[in-house]
Length: 364
Image (cartoon, rainbow, N blue to C red; front, side, top):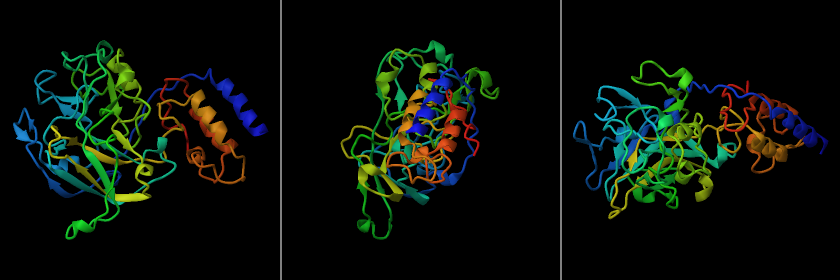
């Protein structure tokens, strides 16, 4: 009890700590994502890339990381210009994603087991990125301007959910033997949250993006978006506010393997039922990083009093045993307990409310 009280007292002194600048240089690794197309059945008709007039039927578009920068659409900019993917302007080119027509499906594989890891942020084990778009107000299109001048006037999103299943093994010669574990819909593929390709960072906007004064380094696609937020939370706010709530997350729809009582999987299947009236688009599927950059226990991009309160509940003291179920992420130095050394990491990472934590703060 004394250790918990001491930690709480120090937490009070941290409330005045200054915020830190956001910067994160995610190092791409193909194994973080699905790397193989096992099977693609287009099903019914799929949309066209309206610039090239070619269909979204290249399944390789779903491999690798989610799109960072797409192109102009003639309204926001000419097609030869790169434009950052933001919640109101998604990936939309034929090489960036694949669409699944009615009655079709897509099966992708990882090169390793994706685990139901209790250390994963907010319990999310994998993320599916589509091209869901936040509707600005029903009439306004994104023209690649100042996100502080773009107000979200509706809670509507344009989403096309596909049914998601996972399997541990899959034999293409005997597909009937595969055991698929299906998630309730929702969550589904190509749903909230829309992809954010770059962090909102006006002080470090790269010059190679034309007319860019707001979008900085690429986001981190292995960090889940806050699962407690939805489209209604951004109604009446600016796009800049929207993007700040992402921090360094790239968004996407998060899935928890607890929902299907599975310890791990290697294969993902996305189905679009006949008669759905939609065609889900898939950009990427990512394995969540259990060693997220900062001890942001509630996935709201900052490290503040809420995270400290959670940490206090998880304290065990030195060499007093493993963290309780649900507290596994609080053992930040992975030494089998939650003690003062872990609190030292929280202390270094403290940013304050609504200020993204320094992703290098853990210093491990």
